[in-house]
Image (cartoon, rainbow, N blue to C red):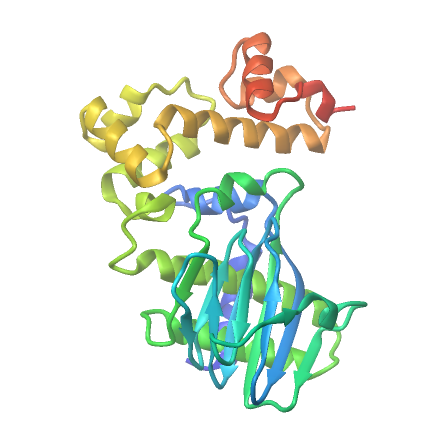
Length: 318
């Protein structure tokens, strides 16, 4: 499949509303849509010899892809990760270092990209990487970032890597020219790359824990799909367990083990996150927003909202 064909296919797919599906409701698309996931800045790094750059933790997803050469990614309390040509990774809210050698002392990388500088070259271009950020609606990133691994590595040898390679080729080509619409094209490509990297990582046979592992699980994933498809329904944990075909106790234990929070806490957190996003748009009343996320009592909704965010719902509408 050519790079051009892959690009056209993904542009068409991305133009669809991510939260809609004619077959199976997709919780990942639902979350990314509600959180208003958007590509922010795209950067390029070229280096030769010895180099090591440190970057701080931020409330966003960061992708790094190696176009040529190789390097190392270092995260706190984690063994150094080797990145080869064609590899792509997603980095959550954690500080990290990217280096030619993991033993090198890093310098602060932020000043090198200051004042809108999107290209940094150190001594040459034996190694070339593309980077970019995916931001979320203010205050709502935590729902997703809390459940994603701090580091997701997608090898060039992974199933699905051919599409990532094609997307990287398109991103690189756009960066090399000054064509009309360049900014919007690169932003959309970066967003599609992020989604495809998450999908590829989640489909790996050893991804069994965390929210992505839960989505991939036939039973727990079905329960999560059912909840996201109709959050206004007064779901109980027993209802979700029934959708999963499990006993309430077994479902609760398996859900908490995989997702890192109990089913009821997950339901409340998503309802409140979705409510806060709706209130921020200021198109609906508090009562309407409460009903849309499953609360018939505005008082109960307000109590749950304050418990989650330590603020009253009305503070998001004024």
